[in-house]
Image (cartoon, rainbow, N blue to C red):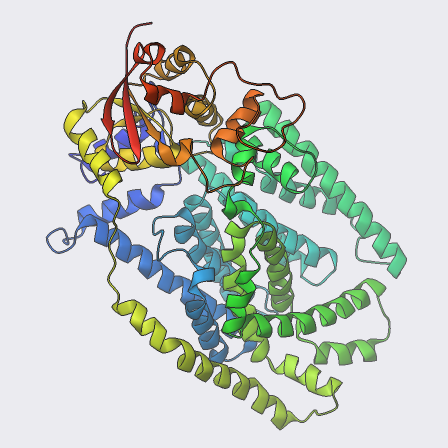
Length: 616
């Protein structure tokens, strides 16, 4: 967008891009979540800052500024829940001192989640305010507008938006079913989620993956089921429990039915790899699917490491979170039981409502939110950033909540109004003093450090490509390396890390045969079918030791191809020895069958580049 003669030409170049994937013209705005970069490029060209600020710094400062908005949104959410600014301050301090576990922005700046999560935090703050009772009509309408805008921007900036919002929809469904949330407000939030996704679908040139999302099917199913079951919240305990189970079953069946119908009509396969991954991850059957195993073997998609809790405990966050969560969960269970019992004892209910914070819809929402996102983080490490940031909010809210301290002091028979005030202010202040004493000097030292990127082998490779290959040359290799090739050299690629496209996944599997046990003529034919001119082999993949046996890339390829894995260890009985040696190893011996199709043109300690012959 910055290099194009005009903005219109730059925009057109994104819609009709034939310089990214070889032999294909793709719409980048449809395939990828890059509207944020488009907006920034327009802003950079319009504002008079070109003489003072390079584009890369404008980009970095924008993202760091967005993180400041993120922390502000967490501050506001905690303040809204507790009624004191001190809670927001503690939440912000905890977020910063636990930044290793709350954000990845300091070492992977352009991640889609770094764009999306600030808008998600704004949305949660707006929902927290929206769920308050007795809002003025104008305040309610303005809050709904804020929820809609933040939901739309969150959905537009991250390809995983639908899965995060599905968890959010489950929170609303749980609270609505238990009558802990006004049904009208839940309906508004369901509608905003659907509308936001449909609007993103339109903006992304009718991206069909969005239409086939479980979120749209689930929300529609909830609204339909609620119309069919109008008397869901009346009757005795057993009667209501039976209705709830029937309601849950109906919503589940309707969701699966609608989702399958939509996917069959639109012939959608974009997200099938995610469901294969989930099926294998939760023990619903082993798989040899290459794409699913590629996710399963990545540490980021594994279980949350136990040492995470040690780091969170060092700042007292984890202890405070468990303390607050334990109390609120117990109270919420009691409240839910009374709601389902449809108790006529108004006096006892009145006492309960006065003594429990979790009867407030906004508190109940944040409670279920933190529980569901906690389960998500425990099962998939990459999603911990959704949980840990909200953990800061929830723990700080509980420590500053008068209702929590009232309930606790009453339970140990030490209740006095003055003691509530003392506890809700003294405990957070003491924790803040502890955090400042223990972590402030280290944070200042970190800010004074200057570091630089050092990878001479990769730099040498990129310089060689720029100097010795045609501008229109097509390169094949690993997804991550090719992303760097595109960024540093502008060359066309066979494949890249955007794994949400089914045809690109098939390409990647074909290109990765360079690390499998395949004949040179087979590999050559596969690569040439994508117009490849050069292929880059990486020793770090060919001789990989980072993963255990069975999770190395070459093992995944062998299993998918039905071949026995290398090295000591067991193989499945139906796997057979390959007819050919491993391509990435054998090509380095310069044997005639390989030299007939591939010529080495570059080599260093890490990379080997081969030029493909054009003969058939």
